[in-house]
Length: 519
Image (cartoon, rainbow, N blue to C red; front, top):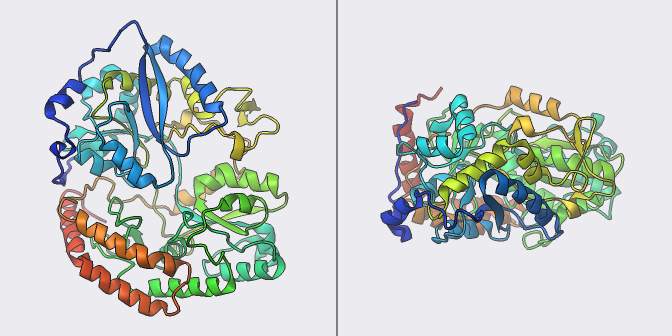
């Protein structure tokens, strides 16, 4: 595949990493061949404290010592301020991390590759140290998805089925009582009726108990996705927000659903109505409690996250902890089919540019991705303790509580469908859900686009400051006059340089499209 690479101005020198050091990283010599080499993998998530992770690693490392004379340890970037902490860690020059979980749509994969955080991987290096991974990705034809200036920057998680599109989780039993046939809600606005019923009939519960970290743009995004044909342009964030969009009707034009059209005002008016109704806590902007546990406890009628969460966690927990609740999911964009498939670099694994043992790191990765025994340990834990097999399905021991007993290894950068058994806790309609999404979802057209952010990062930061001032308050209905607030926000975004950034992005898209005609 012919590709046009759009380079950023950031270079290795900005990180204080010399070319000599990078060259040294590719040397294969280990400190002491008689001792196992410790390989550390960076993962996202809160490190578990129940001891299960350590017990699993003990068994896994016994295998890895025999297979590769190596051990594996996990370094956690926890969810509190994760974006800042993740990027700081990658650019710190720390040589104690070898493998890095990354992604191009949410973990700044291209940006960090351009800044020299990852070690470029040659074909020979991959074939020698990760032969099974090389062969699988090569057969799938996906290496081109990972190249910057013709060099492989990371390994895609391209052999795993998932949907991470967001939406509302809600109770089908309460929806039935609220007057919805079969307990199924089919439009975003219909949640008003559901919320009203909860407010009247379940006074102990919030219609939607939501924390400040649980989606401070969820109302706006959910509404916009179902009422426009726009989708965010991935990899272009302004603070915590993705303001730039393209559309199905004109995929080559860069625009913004925050800046154009009346739909944002409509969404904000709906949020104002929900706030007045008391859908969420008065202090939702600052609340940091565990609202999912409130959902499981019957003290919230709604939660929000993505399809994978619903299939693998919500359905089982609600049917177990709230028998008869009939949990359902309304995905955003359901009204108009505005849905895109996950890109194959939604999860990816890179080797740190500072790793002292890059070859050994690849050897370990090849094992945890392709050796079933190693894969099962890392992903599921110890059989009989962390999980049990029942009639070919993966289940859990009696008394197991996912909120307390989960393994928490968070290996999101090398999963394989062939090693993923059906789970007894999965929604039994999992395949039906996937099939329905497959019929609607489109391929994201810009999966190989690399944005030149060298001149626009400061402006994006300034835009992020403006958005953080307005979007959460619009989302939770806190403005008495949403139209006035949106007008002010749009002017401040223009003053911050919105048009300059949009023009720069348009230039990148136009250049990319010369080699990638858009339908």
